[in-house]
Length: 246
Image (cartoon, rainbow, N blue to C red):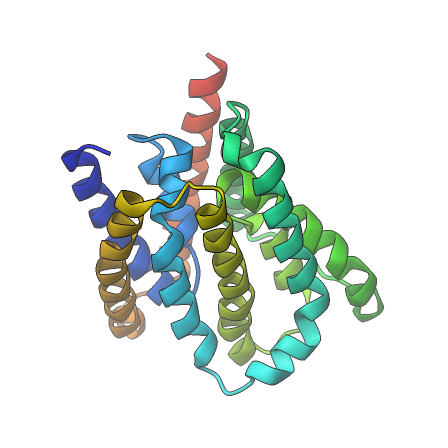
């Protein structure tokens, strides 16, 4: 990575951390979407490794319901982690060209659902049998593009989860994802010394942005901010998709 790419990446982490502090998610998604404008997808995935671990551990630790959430969602978390690692082993480490199309599609779907305020509802008796399917699919997507938001996020939003648990649930599930992703990157040589240094340096702006986002959360309309974020993700997805097809 060139010096200007590193500076740009660190600035992106400050912005993405602030968004995560405001709405509880978005750090890897925003980071991948923006950094892939100036660097290869495999470089961008390596860059998010350490910041996502630290920010998700912070988020997972706050809420007081860690054991209950893990007990409920382990049928989702375990298949997701296994699928992610296997995907990285089989194809993710090779960085296939069509992975950018998957990334563009993920951003378009997620951004569009957010703008349209689409929140599916899932019957309680379907949660257990569906959780492993969602885990495997989300792990495959994460292994390709570094973020598991589709179909993970719509699934979690469709569950009967108390508002107070939503942020901590996201933190726990995404913490398991980021830990598995980092282990995979290390095992397959995608997170070598130079990349690990840059990823480690990105932890500070990510945490600073998250702290800033939490501080200003009460001063802004979070709903309007969420719509702006989803709109930006949709546009970046369309740009990513079009740039690969045209």
